[in-house]
Amino acid sequence: MPPGLKDVAARAGVSIKTVSNVVNGYVHVAPDTRARVQAAIDALGYVPNVAARQLRSKRSGVIALAVPELQSPYFAEVAGLIVQAAERRSWTVLIDQTDGHAERERNLVAGLRRHAIDGLIFSPLALTGEELARGGETPMVLLGERVWHGPADHVAIDNTAAAADATRHLCALGRRNVAAIGAQDFASATTAHQRLAGYRAALDEAGLPFDPRLVARVDRFHRADGAAAMAALLDRPRRPDAVFCFNDLLALGAIRTLLERGVRVPEEVAVIGFDDIEDGRFSTPTLSTVAPDTARIAHLAVDLLAERLGGDAVAATPAREVRVQHRLVARESTAR
Image (cartoon, rainbow, N blue to C red; front, side, top):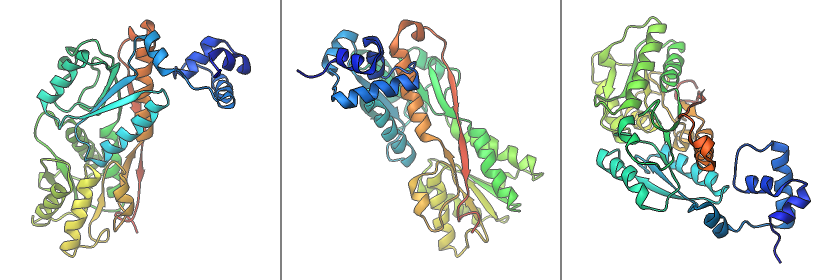
């Protein structure tokens, strides 16, 4: 007969309830107790009866993750990390791509109640907090910069501070014509607005005037957009000696244009990106960047969702704002 919760509890010297809490991934378990229970589980070869657990809890064991685009290395990495974190709770993750379209995001949120999904981790681009609040009672955790102080727990980095750090790094190198690639005019482009604000704040701090001619606007944060924007900057009378790109894909595109034009990086133009995607660690030159703690973002999102699903007391608490740290990674594209 396979071992059960009672056997694990006896071996670990804890209650059956404590074993259940560990198996279900509840966060309010002392680390030493969790380690003792996990050791007993491993020693006995205990395997949770997922089907029985779902019947008892009236949960499906399935959550949804919705991101703007999966072709973005940043969102692909976050999705993979969320799947890993969910697996530790025996959860299955359904992944959807919204392309940032309001109607798709609206249908996603409104349609959750028709499916056997316990909760949603969502990075919206188009919907406001008010629209998200009308989506129903399905527990939700928000990612990204679009909605702050909204209807659900929210995990994000401080984009303005991170962008200021990137720009400050370029100014510290003695660069005085610091350009920016990634500005966007439409209202829902919250990420671009915050990173532009950080760029301008760092210029002001360094005593450098803001010059709109050094700001290149893009439709999307893709390599081709970065390449085209860099070409436009090089064709302007005031050429930059450094560029802050609002993500790494834009930076990689910009570096390609600089290479084609015979402009040396970083000697003539220093380039820094944002996101610390793997491509940047293997580019030539390797890419300086701002690195969000993506692992922390993913694990916090799953943990917060688990807490909301864990009981009425937590479910009734106000929405929480959680800031995750970032760090600046200087590589060859700014300093050989």
